[in-house]
Structures are given as C-alpha cells and as structure tokens.
Image 1 (spheres, rainbow, N blue to C red):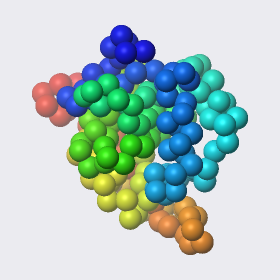
Image 2 (image 1 turned 90 degrees about the vertical axis):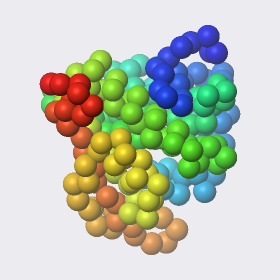
Image 3 (image 1 turned 180 degrees about the vertical axis):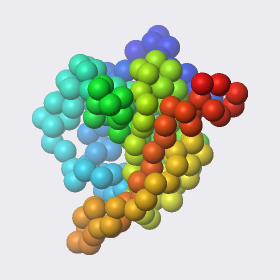
Length: 185
C-alpha cells in the first residue's frame, strides 16, 4: 500500500482503506472509549462488524472512505464521504484520528480539506454535511477551519455514558468551496 500515492494534502495522504494494513488499527480505535466518545454512532465494534465495513468501503457506490496517513506514512485515522445521495448531490462526512499522539496536529483539518476538494471537484457534489458533539471543540474548530458553516443545534441527539448530548450541525456548499482562494465557480 505504501506505493499508492492516494490524495495528498499539506500534511497527510489519503489512501483507500486496506483490510490487511488498516483493520487492526480500526478495530482497536473503534473499541477505545476515548477515541469514539465523540463519534455519533459507535459504541464498540466486533471483528465481524469491522470486516463488514471494509467490504462496504470497497464498493464506493454511496460512500468513499480513506485511511489517513501522516507525513511518515503511518496510519493515524480514517475520513469518509458517506450517505451520498447522487440525485440531490449531497453527502455526510466524518473523520476520526485514532492515534492519540496525532491529535491536535492539524491532520484532521488537512484530511477534511483533501476530502472536501475530492467531493466538489471530482464527485461534483453540491452539499456536504457534518456534525459534532457540542463539547467536541477540536472537531468544530477543524470543520470551521476547513470552510464548513455552523447551521444549528440538534438538541439531545446523542446518548453517551448515561446522558444526552446536543450536536452542532455543519454544512458546506459547492459555491462556498469554489468561492474561496480564487477557485472561481
């Protein structure tokens, strides 16, 4: 997999998820309460569930997923464009940095930028949506740094550790993306 260039950012590289190279990390991260505490739908996964995800990720019909590699080529997380509605040209997005020593270094923001470029320039999507648990300030900062606009609050949407949490809803339109940095429309 090291010879796959993938999609390059300033700090990271996105490559297709490979079961032989990324499965063990995925299983470890998705079962680490500290890593998944801000994710919207993960409460631990079984090996079979993770196998099923890798199989689904290969199809690329309604989801594009990538493993995130740091500057040294180390696998540090995943990012995805998911729930693609081709007719409406919209999709959800998500990123998880699983390696804790990679937190706070800008890798998530860079992965979001690369993923966003692919969504609008290659797939021709019109709208990307994301959300963040209200107390996940790092995720909100990364989304805003990448160009997502805060659109509202979903009250008591996520149940975690015995309590309900609000989530912050974010969106980005193709026109937002193309108007930044002289990209034109």
